[in-house]
Image 1 (cartoon, rainbow, N blue to C red):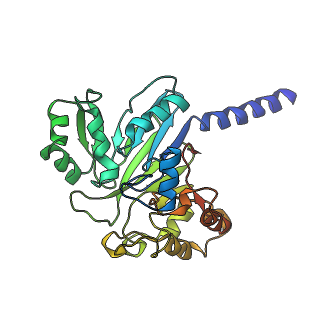
Image 2 (image 1 turned 45 degrees about the horizontal axis):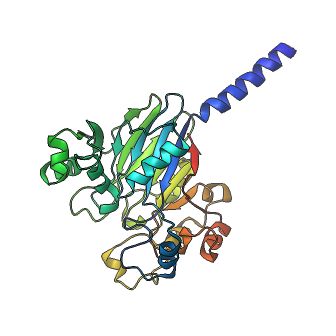
Length: 304
């Protein structure tokens, strides 16, 4: 009997340890322009400039520590710092991703690819997985086309709804979301590990424009990293209809009928430099979390 109990305990511990070998790691949480933001005179920007504290543009890594490899979602303007973050906190040395997935062709999501060029890293065949319009954009517009031509990066087309296996046991599936698609389509990503699955949607116009029910998705997923660009419509002195995003207030109202367990699955990400949710000690952060929702933070892990 003691031997059986010991075996069961061993199996439980082994399973728990094994399940923690795969995880999402948060590399950045801001909107495309980052923080501090060019030309910004918001108090948050001034504090960031004065303290030299930088908040990185939204990006995540998916890591399999059993094989010591990772994939990257978004090639941001902060990619130099973000890959160094992985070196300092996850791996023992500088390491390139096995592949890079890009949601769309807005500046915070793909322009970091330039650092793989001959003026910087001079990499060889970095695998970049993108949807068809994004693929054409990168291959027919300089300077990105040069990266392809001289094999700094290697483009692999993916399609909505088509599952790709990564890192032995991670499945990645792009899904279509409505957004300002000037140069490419826009994807969200389903990221599924052995035990849990996450939804990554850093950019979307409005939830009501989508052909999916966000409330139902919250019930189906274990973690959701979703667009929180603006807390409310009074946040910036611009016509917010020119840069549509679901306001955090709208998302909270939409999901307010969910129970506490489901609300706790939601992690807001991709916050504008004016969004005080970026500050974990702000009244706004406390207000959002008091309603049962979460805010993604740099260095956070989500085990899959």
